[in-house]
Amino acid sequence: MTNSILLLPGDGIGPEVLGEATRVLDALRDGFGLDVSTQEDALGGAAIDRYGVPLADETLAKARASKLVIMGSVGGPQWKMPYDKRPEQGLLNLRKGLGLFANLRPAICFPALANASSLKREFIEGLDIMFVRELIGGVYFGEPRGIETLHNGERRGFNTQSYTTSEIHRVAHVAFSMARQRAHRVCSVEKSNVMESGLLWREEVTAIGQAHYPDVELSHMYSDNCAMQLVKAPKQFDIILTDNLFGDLLSDAAAMLTGSLGMLPSAALGEDGKPGLYEPIHGSAPDIAGAGVANPCATILSLAMALRLQLDRADLADLVEAAVSATLDDGYRTCDLMPGDDVRIVGTRGMGDAVIERLRG
Image 1 (cartoon, rainbow, N blue to C red):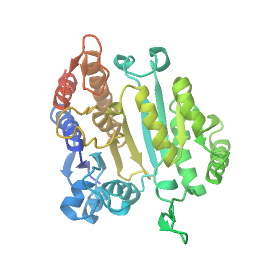
Image 2 (image 1 turned 45 degrees about the vertical axis):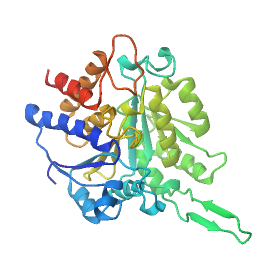
Image 3 (image 1 turned 135 degrees about the vertical axis):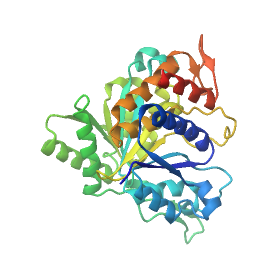
Image 4 (image 1 turned 90 degrees about the vertical axis):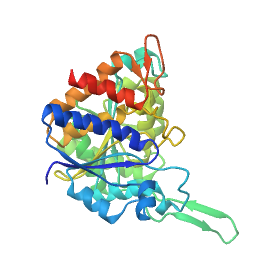
């Protein structure tokens, strides 16, 4: 497999933010000897418009043949159709088709944004949480699912939450292995008090920890308590391991601790040697699409994760992250970040320009 990157801009603000990450990628190729090639295709609503489906078979084939995939976002109100044909289904199919079972979502508070959080500075300054979210199981993929009409005329919507031991084990190994590179602490989150799938999750994560990672401290927490604790004392956490649904909700909540959804990258990984997917955790934001005001930092930082995790260029990842941090230190802000004294409000392109300028030194 060559160092080929598949770019999937998607919908809404996706093309805008991925465009800035691509400019950073070009700067790394031109000035720092990064040896990668790129190609582009459609995903989500853009794929429906081009191919008639949210993820075309040929696009999935390109993804499987690539070293990694970087995407923007999917979805929008103009694509109103059944769930299995909506733009978001393209992303779910891509994750499933690539076998991406582990979603890494870091929630890091950059020093310059400590006052941008809705919490007091002392609660979030220095925050560094890693969410390890199971990505292709649970209620988003469980069967049966659907909407039916009952014999009495009422309608019933239903989804199935289920996990197998192997699904739990493989993502737990990712979390425990990462913990050995960080603070040797994992907090596993579920609802084992009311859900059998949560009880199995707790039992199997405990078994994996005891059998393979006795040097890692394991704690357990119910998801509702975890939501409260993220607001009450977020710095108590290092790695949070959780399922697909709770990981989606809790990591988005943690995003606002850092100042904005526009600052949080993510990586979705499968088996070693297989292509990963890198994307910002924010949505397509159709209300501001085309206005040139979206924050591209999460997508740029997703590129940094790709450099570190799959391209074996941690040196360049450090440079990109430092360039983003320096840009914020110098007062550059997009409109999603709370303004303060001595800041300069810029658009998507302006933030990309500032990051590239600092990257080049």
